[in-house]
Length: 427
Image (tube, rainbow, N blue to C red; front, side, top):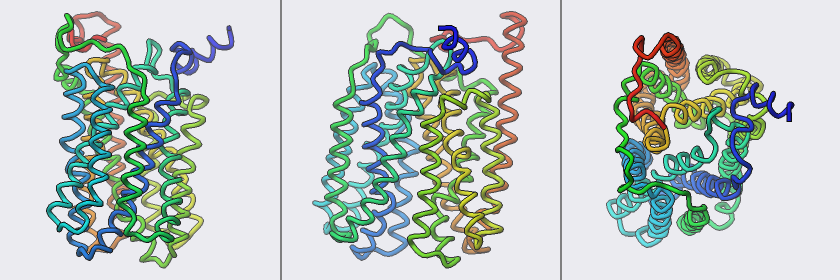
């Protein structure tokens, strides 16, 4: 017992909650969700090309996901927090996603506008999965001592497993069956996602008629710490759009063949899985903001090395291995910050803001700006720019840490000497 208490003191995420938490339903949800993403995102453009669409139209379809991420996650989050029925809402969203995925086969020859409507519907529906799924998970794994990083990592790693297995397996299956079968496989995976959502256990949630006051998110967002935090998140992910949108093109331009490109992606995701699996052992060694600053600085080095030494395979492998810090550690630190500052009645909206500001806006801006940079100066320039953006992110994270330290010092001096916690901020 003493050893367990000491471990909990060393890592505030340990030993926080009861052993009644069931990881399997949440692991199945992330496995199915990221498995579907691992099929759709890499191979959907190839299917559009098979249908005869131009690169301009394919690019417009690809941008739909980023555009819908600006509105969909927060919309679903608002409904979940105000309606008090998160599990039911997640089941509805996943069912709608499965129906939209099934409709891809029906509209494959109907023209660009019906197809665009179905794809937009798919993205709008599955925009609920991350904010609501994270809020449900954090309700189970965030307690008085913080985030249970051991359990969270072991659940979240199944999303990475689903992604990498899907990318590799469907690369083979689509080669054998033909790219024209993509809608059938997509429908099957999103049906699996809907099944996983319906398998989630119901959680006790207060309905909209509960006696507690309606939670207002605005007092939380006025905190300087969170403003700097979200700025840092946006810039870190903006830097990573160089990776998500242009890395494969950059490698092909440098002469790497397709198996080599796939291997370099696999290296990064394998490191990500290892980090999540072992997070309970090492994440507590640094606080959240030290992880975020470290992730931003390592991101700057990673993309500078990618730009300068892209023709050296060993350097690229080393750069891809840093994904364990630039994505996995960064994501877990962000999740911990969200869980700490957004109590249960605000948590879905907090997770939604993280998705919108972290992945929606940077996806739109990064894809457009990266395209302009690559046309004017070449693909290497995109990675140099990403390195500079990451340095700016490190500065924002430092400012967030300083603001958090000032708030803690003010709280220790007394209730009238600093930031005043509004009633809506209380759990």
